[in-house]
Amino acid sequence: MKQYETVIGLEIHAELNTESKIYCSCRNAFGQEPNTQICPVCMGLPGTLPTLNEKAVDFAVRMGHALSCRINSVCRQDRKNYFYPDLPKAYQISQADIPLCENGHLEIMIDGAEKTVGIMRIHIEEDAGKLLHDASYAGSLADYNRCGVPLIEIVTEPDIRSSGEAKAVLDTIRGILRYLDISDCKMQEGSIRCDVNVSVREKGSSELGIRCEMKNVNSFSAAVRGIEYEAKRQIGILESGGVIIQETRRWDDAKGMSFTMRTKEDAEDYRFFPEPDLGTIVVSEERIEKLKETIPELPNAKVFRYVKEHGLPETDARLIADDIDKAKLYDECTALGKCRPKSVSNWILGDISKFCNDTGRSILGTPLTAEKLAGLIAETEKGRISSSAAKTVFRVIVDEGGEPCEIIERLGLAQNSDTESLKQLAAEILAANEKSVSDYKNGKKNALGYLVGQCMKASGGRANPEIIRELLENLLNG
Ligand code: ADP
Ligand code: MG
Ligand code: ZN
Image (cartoon, rainbow, N blue to C red; front, top):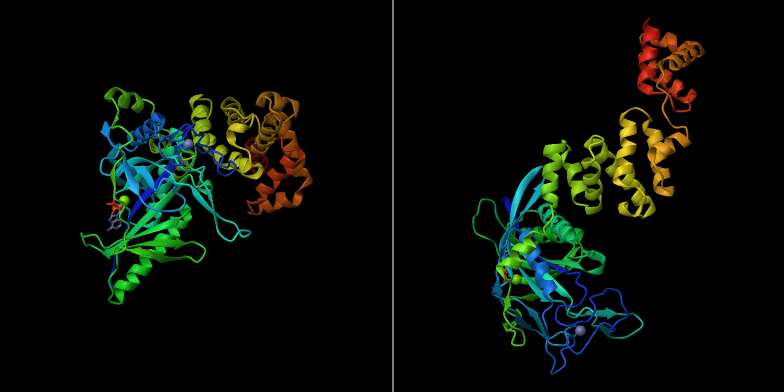
């Protein structure tokens, strides 16, 4: 069998979290009673005129900056005409040949290596309504609340080479949207969706193969499954001497298969033309620069800093940086300079993440502040409390609040590092465990671990384990 390479390009739609819709003053809110967030403008009634929400432009320009795009300070909006019951106007206002942003790029990290994926364009457009299919009603129900919700469409170059890379692109883009706070990115609410273009070609070939575009990809994991299925399907056709037909396919995630929707011959003609009811969009250079200043340090830059300056392993750095809440706590905590960054990372990815998963609470929703976490870790690093006592203190802070030092005092959790009293404890344990002592002397060095454990138990977990180990060794070898 020949060697094949998969080529992928993504079209990602993200709903912007502006207060109001893109061309009218209806609220942009998810989960409301059907057909309560609508008005004559977003229903496209005759005689109405749209007014562009400038926030949507600002949000798109900010995303353009984050993806290093060129911003087209003068651009236009166009009508894309098609008939579908979820679109009462029978056209969608979008941008055709001149998008707001173009020619950008995105860095992804994949298996420890960095890769650049080109961004063709980012444009603004309006969302359509939603059709609901209720078993109790023989027909479709239309909810128009989503009509006119602002969207940005981010189109990548066909630079992606595997489902893993596609997943990395989607995760990275979602991370950036969250950092910029311009989209809720809730897959289950459909606030971020994507169409996946897939082709295959012989390895080494410089020409692109014929692509299929897959729609109805409703989650990032469905994108991964869809790409893998589609590449296999196309390779199967080529291997059996067939040719790929350019077509739009529908991904059925439950069946794990894609099906033909329409081929190039019956491709839709959208009859794009300039939107006559809206003026040219003109964004001043000054405004473009101002918006650039609002871009915070983005996840990729954070990963780089955590690895280079803090010595974190890349996977840990990525896990923290991709989650804005984790990154906030990590940055604030390490900025205090009271404890090692690696300890902060271990806490956030370990006990804190586990607590949030178990309780469904968010990191920023507990009384644990960066100061408290840094204080708790510092006490542990100084050897004042054991790691198990630190877990106890953590639980008290998140459940009831309070200061680490005060909790340590109140619960008597301070570790005993007093050599004199520990020496006495060690001697007592040795006297009570003659068998282990003779085992140790006969070469069974792991008997020491058991003896340390006995001392810890007898001290109620408060003996400093390092000091105990040293004292026991001295006594046994002395
Ligand atoms: P169209 O205007 O016909 O939709 P575009 O040039 O806008 O085509 O590309 C749409 C998407 O398809 C982009 O994400 C692009 O990267 C991707 N794409 C284009 N050609 C191929 C190909 N041969 N294989 C895979 N993806 C492709
Ligand atoms: Mg396209
Ligand atoms: Zn409206």
